[in-house]
Image (cartoon, rainbow, N blue to C red):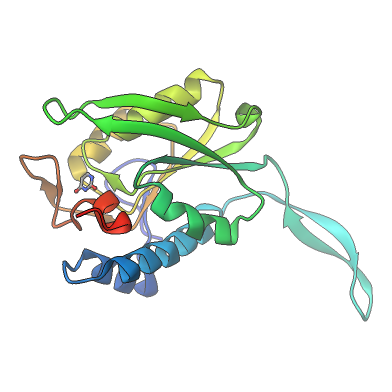
Length: 214
Ligand code: URA
């Protein structure tokens, strides 16, 4: 995967993912197709974001012989969805990572300041022992993701990755400055944020499009 101008940020340029991304950007994509495509994109992101997980060999017996074969080792996983749009990526991630625990962080953007305000926080008790993958589809200003990462570090999490669909350069600059230790995997770095804090060209409001609320 290509490196970007941002430290620790990877854009997945796989044609299949980029093709599906085009369809979720389109305004005429229906809610059911949008949801299905986000799930499929999240599956591909789960595949890429776990590329560097450690493995160890275990002895298994096939119908023909016994040999040493790799399994994932190291920290167990926890997916953390930033409500509400993060939930759209959750099913696809769980499809590939069925044993992962799941946490939720509720944040909303103050419409005037665009600052993130927390209203819900529920994560597994042993989250500090896990590799945490935070799901935040739209990295706009980066305020929500930064607040979520701050909170997770506050409760003792040391291994964190962030998965987004789209990011604005402004958000990536804020995020990588606040949390340079957190690798970010995403599908596209878009052009800019508009005056209302929306990513351009973007895909609109991810939560509304996933849940059909507008
Ligand atoms: N959140 C969204 O859902 N869309 C944007 O473009 C920015 C933030």
